[in-house]
Figure 1 (tube, rainbow, N blue to C red):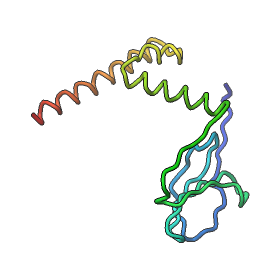
Figure 2: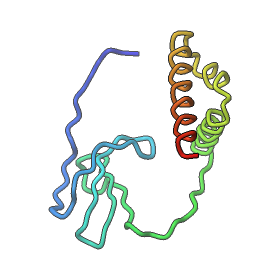
Figure 3: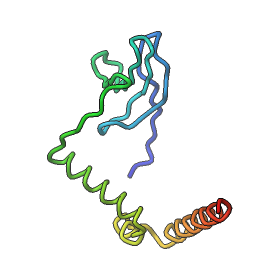
Length: 127
């Protein structure tokens, strides 16, 4: 790991109807997200200053499936399974996979306990 740092400015985007929505990480790349009201509503992610280097979708577009293969499929399955294990309470396997030290584990456990206490208290108040 390196200590080098860079500051990346937002990419050029000249559409006056677009509103900046921030930085996002999409399809393995950093990009600038915009919401455009000019053509009925579009979400656009610009990956560079190159005009053709973007991804977009109309707001309200019908949901569609996504076909993944190879490394993309493996990465998706890994993240999906990790998320599932975490939400099923299998914290130790997640900690082990990421080789988290005991101090970090203790901090996470403390935070999870606080969340559980808040949830229990809230549920007790609504009964």
